[in-house]
Image 1 (tube, rainbow, N blue to C red):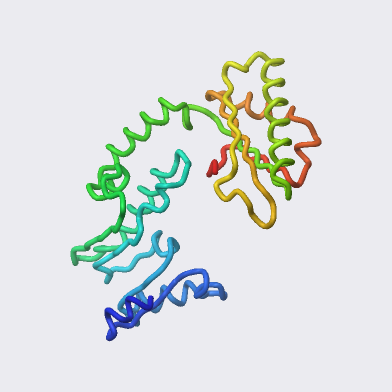
Image 2: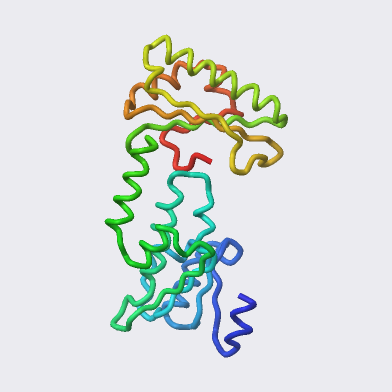
Length: 237
């Protein structure tokens, strides 16, 4: 915001982020002001990317478009493509042509190139092939178990215990061949004073098996407030 005001001292600038929209009707007020052209430039976080109808907007700029691409998550490219496509749609919604400038340190990435070329089919086909090769959804079902503890060693011990228990249940019920289990530190490993380790379960398309596996884990794990079980997680980090 400071840099924009230096570059365009005559322009009226609005900013939409967590700080400016925390009050009731905060975002709505900013949106209405900008829609009525009471400001020339709107700066914001991802909240301004989706669903806003702004007919007078002719230019959209995105800074560091590849941040999300570095997340160790199989949906990272999909999220980036979705967000870039949505934010690009804010420009040129009236008769005036729109222009979108995307800044990136990884401009050759498939998701960004498909956004640039508006190639939904190319992106879909590539993503589908990759997910099939790696047995990721929709070709499998996932469950994420997050273990939190003030001690990293204790969190690790519990994750190993859960890992052994899961394999035991799978072997006893004859579906160990359909199962993959991976344990790793969460992307934000320490949060609110607790270390976090994830146990990720992957089962080939068998939804009932996944639920049965988790349900048989044991009450001591299921009711533990420091253990969170997420079926079909949005993020695996």
